[in-house]
Image (cartoon, rainbow, N blue to C red; front, side):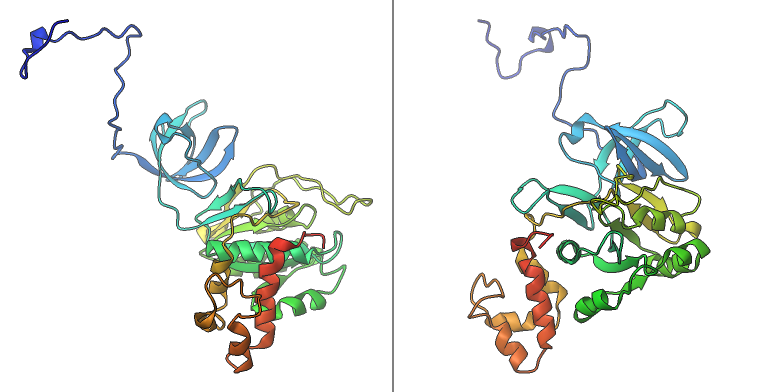
Length: 335
């Protein structure tokens, strides 16, 4: 075997030829400093539709991203053909740091997290007052997920022409969750849509809800020039049919905000949620946890919150609401 000294001449170094004729591999990744900024509108079978300036560009993940996921709402760096012309394909080379991530799991025993949307700052929980009947446990779970992700919740109640919203609103009154009540007639006339649109102004809002509650109908009213397919509720099962199969970000008229319509959910698992973070959504109760034992679940005999409430620092109903939300992981949504 030929050995080389510390400073071999270049002519003495043998270079193994590359049979494939391509460039040798390297661990040095390009910085892509000239990449354009993009906003992911939807993801469909490995193809990502991005908004780059005022153009819609189809892109795919660059190999250098590895297994890093890209979801609707992500702000990304894009290179390649950015013309948006038919049959062109760009590459996403970088995913910018996310300000928020809304996650869910299939159920409470499933450790696999599914990222619903990124960079939203508000979660609109859409539920019908009838046809299908409201599912308070699902609402509670969505609230917990919103608080955990740092999103502000908004309760949107549809089909008020079929049932009153008073009973449902009474159970959420102590949480202080803002709400909007709509009917099908008000949506058709445009009045309800404008009322909801005011709540969405200058925000990125993700819409969640189970199938059949009128979520996509509401989105169509908010963004009338981008109509999505709607379905109906099965008269036997009381469940809606999935008509939205992928999340889609839509700009509100006038560029005053974004709506992200997501597929209907039948469950909202909370395996990923740290119960210790839920207390941050209760600023009137949080100071009272200083006297709690270590790793307190806030629903046990030695919890300091009981004395905090007894001393008049917060309303008893607020503590009840906190514990109801924390208990959602132990209860099925149909209970």
